[in-house]
Image 1 (tube, rainbow, N blue to C red):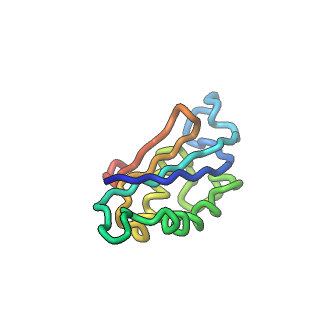
Image 2: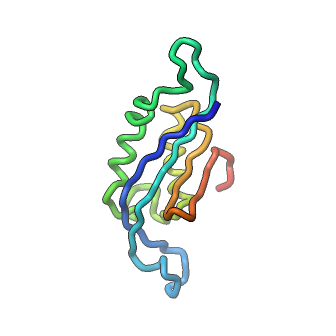
Amino acid sequence: MKISQAFRFEAAHRLPNVPKTHRCHRMHGHSYRVELILSGPVDARTGFVADFFDLEEAFAPLLKTLDHHCLNEVAGLENPTAENIAIWIWDRSKTQLPQLSAVKVYETADCWAEYDGSDSR
């Protein structure tokens, strides 16, 4: 079984490693959407893979770190691409959410990056 919970945050960033002529080289902002996807069996007693309230609690400190901040100033996000944001969230969530199977980060409604813990860095 898979479950997912979505979160939203607003943040500014710039991509320092693209050419100066690239529009994302300049500071700009996004309304990000993050999905935490968990996989596992349904607990016979609770009927849950995991309690959504536990997901909210686990993600709250990260959300606070990201929301309404300049992502380039967040330690570990000096190059805040959607891909790097997904890895950053995974690295800080997996211990607390052992059933985490993927993190999706939407920069817009139409473009996103998904990280499943595979070593694709």
